[in-house]
Structures are given as C-alpha cells and as structure tokens.
Amino acid sequence: MTRLSTPARADAEALDRDDTLRGLRERFDLPAGVRYFDGNSLGALPASVAPAVATAVSDQWGTGLVRSWNDPWIDLPARAAGKIARLIGADGNDVAVTDSVSVNLFKLLSAALRLRPGRDVIVVDGGEFPTDLYVAQGLCEGPNALARLRRLDDGADWAASLAKMDDVAVFCVSHASYRTGALADMQALTAAAHAAGALVLWDLSHTAGAIEVDLAGCDVDFAVGCGYKYLNGGPGAPAFLYVAPRWQAEAWNPIQGWLGHADFFAFEGTYRPAPDVSRFHCGTWPILSMTALDAALDAFDRVEMAALRSKALALGDLFLQCIEPLRVAHDLEVITPVDHRRRGGMIALRHVEGYAVMQALIDRGIVGDFRPPDIMRFGLAPLYQRYVDAWDAAATLAEVLTTRAWDTPAYQSRQRVT
Ligand SMILES: *Cc1c(COP(=O)(O)O)cnc(C)c1O
Image 1 (spheres, rainbow, N blue to C red):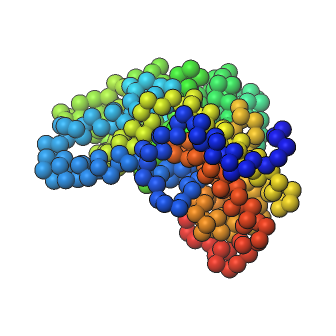
Image 2: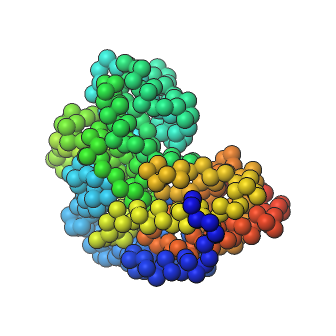
Image 3: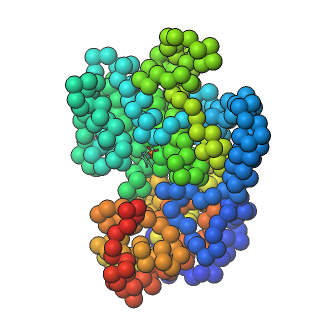
C-alpha cells in the first residue's frame, strides 16, 4: 500500500462513476440498506430468478405436468453447464451440473483412485474445507476403505511435499482457501501433481464466478464447484463437476444411478455408463433449484471474467486501504494475501472478538460472515458491489472497533449459522 492518506468517500463515488461494470448491479434484487459481503457464502438474488422459478412452478409443472420433462427440463443441466463452462475455462461438454460439492467430491475421488491402480493415497491439506476432508476420510475408513488419507500440515509447501511422494493417486485442493482467501497456483500445482504421478481434483467453490479459471489450459484432471456462492444459484443450488476429456470414457462413477446410464429411458437391467461426462449424474435433478441456478447464471451474460476480476481486486484494494489505520490500533490482522496473484475472491481479517464484531457489522447493514476461531470474511462480488459499499464497510468497521460497539452480550451469543 503506497497510498499515504485514507481514501475519502468521494474517492469511492468517483470510482463508481467510472466503473464500466456498474450497470450489472441492476441484474440483482438487493434489499435496501444492506451492503452485502457474503456472496462467498450465499450469492445475492439475481432479478431473473423469481420469474423463472414462477414459470417453472405454474406453467411447466402446473400446466405442462410430465410433458415438461421433454421441454424444457431434460436440457436444463446441460444448459446450465454451458454457462458455467465459459467461466471456468472449460467446454460445456466437459461439465455436469449435478448433486452437491460433497457428493461430487465422493464421485470424482473414487474415479481418480480407480484411474491410478497401484497408488492408494489421497492427499488433502489439513486446513482444507471440512467437507473435502470428511469425504476423503470416509473413503479411507472402515472395512471397505478404498484408500489412505494423507493430510498435509496446514500451510505446507504442497508442490515440494508431492515431489517426495510416489504413492499418491489424487491430490484434492481448493483453488482459493475458504478461510484465508489465498489463491493457489493452479498451473504449477497441477504440473507438480502430474510430475509425482498423481491426478488432481480442484475445488472451485471459492473461485468459480469470482476469478478467471482455466481448467483446460492448466491441464486439470477433475474439478468440482459450488452453485450457491459466487454463481448466485440460491440456497442449496446444484453444484457442478468437470472431467477432462481424456478421462471421460474411463472415469467410473461409484454412484451408478439411472440418469448416468447411456440410455436412461431404455430401462435396461444392467448399468452402462454414458460415454461422456453425463455418466456423473445419478438421480433425478432438482428442477426448481436447477431452474433458479440456470436463470441466475444469466447475470454473467456478456460479462468477461477478466473484467470482473479486475474490479474485485480494486474493491479489495480500496477496502484494504481504508482499514489500514485500524490494523495496528485494533490488532486487526489481514490474512488474505495483498499480492493480486495470490488473492482469492474475499478479504479475511482476524480479530480476537471477530464474532461479536461481525454481529455488530451485520446489525449496521454490513453483511459478511465469521469462521472460527476468529476470522471475519468479506466476500467481493463485483457483479453487484459498488466501491462505496467497500468504503462503507471499512468505515462501519472503524466505528465498531473504535466505539467498542461489539462489546455487548447481544453480539457475543453464537447462532447456529455464523
Ligand atoms: C462451500 C464449499 C463446499 C460446499 O459443499 P456442498 O456439499 O455443496 O454444500 C465444498 N467445498 C468447499 C471448499 C466449499 O467452500
């Protein structure tokens, strides 16, 4: 940070006036009085969603009834996959929109293990998102264990660790950390995993829709990602998965459901996997959620990820400049890398009273979230955020810290969802 003085609100207003993406905010229904910084947990509601879901309920379900399966429901997952593919550097034919991230992790880790006979280790960082760790643990426990789990120490040098191993089947890693917002080097780590003879499964939950991703260009084997975060698909939206073309004919889906069959309406008695990525479907798609996600993805229509990324970095820079005076005065630690090449889609701050401070912020209309033990997360969502929102968030944080507004029992008692 080379800037000498803290930016004024007028500086933020000027940035908004010059922002070529500012019109995209109109693609969202945002509540008055809220500055939303939790798109990294639950994306805001795109204006296109409510009419699409209403049509799916009344016209397609109510009137069309079962006829709506042929038009439009049967094509819905592929349509949504095509829209997501553009955002992650993939071809639509290599992406399936289906199930949750957790279930997709199970399917793809199992597939990767089978593709690497003679190797039985799954490597996951110890600080990885819990579901990634839990699913890997599940595959490595009990009488039917398929593999052994090797956790890397939180913060280890992943490439160096992989280089010392010769038994790894698959390395499962988040593109951006859910806690710190640090971005991993997809190109270098994929190459490091391959050099060690392993496959790699990237979790894009914190980057799809936030950051330019180039799965094909980085030679990635597998990826999963979340529909309800930066993609704004709504609570519990279907997730997606990616399988590199070179693995599609071989990769085994351990949940052999009827919609993954090569000819699911032939009702054959024996499972025959679809020849392509659609073998990773299992059961019937949640059409209402899928409709919401498909409509939500239109918020990205004609938007370049590079432009979104630049704005997200600028929003983060402004926020960091504004909170700079608070760091020393209030023991606030910025744990997200400031370096643009290593920064993910959010800014994470540590403070001993992080939970209470965040509750005070939420009460004042600045909605971020909290992760234990002491991390406040501020998600950056350039589709709908303005520079004044970042400025207001920093100013409100300054007010809460300097007046100790957080220091009241109402802000200390923990809710179930933080
Ligand atoms: C949000 C998130 C998930 C979500 O998993 P679901 O099963 O879809 O709820 C998984 N992994 C990471 C890294 C996440 O951030």
